[in-house]
Length: 180
Image (cartoon, rainbow, N blue to C red; front, top):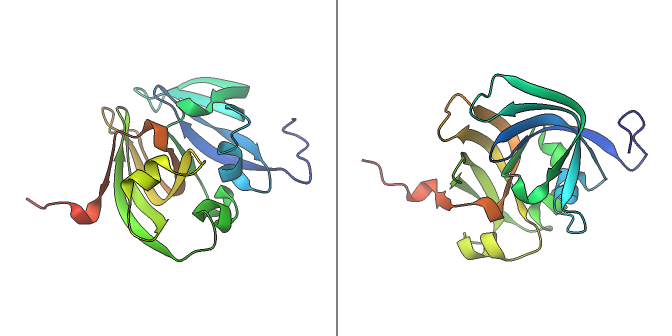
């Protein structure tokens, strides 16, 4: 699919992709289901990033390379930061249907990154349901701040992000935090 000529059913979305070792900043062609539909499509285990700029996580301000197209393995992506909430896709898809949602302030960690923000979830917070049930691997989070644990200079604040639930080590509700 060429970057120059998006089809009627596809549009270009800018995003930052975070893997265990790289930050990839680029554009992706998404269908009418948005990035949420593309990233959670189980028929493809990879995706193409157009006009991709690469930086190593341990040197976030130094550009390593620039490619016309980079292919990423979806399972190796920890998080995706978007510039606009609308780029995630239709709200029914992002939220998992038309239901009343509760907002939970959370902290999510992996060996490389830490993500803080607000997760919208139907009903009460149920860790096992978020982490195991359903077919989507990437879960939306809003008003998010992503930080590299060992490199605090890599800090990204975004209106909307998605995290890979298979990469999560810890998920905590900030309302259950004990102040010292």
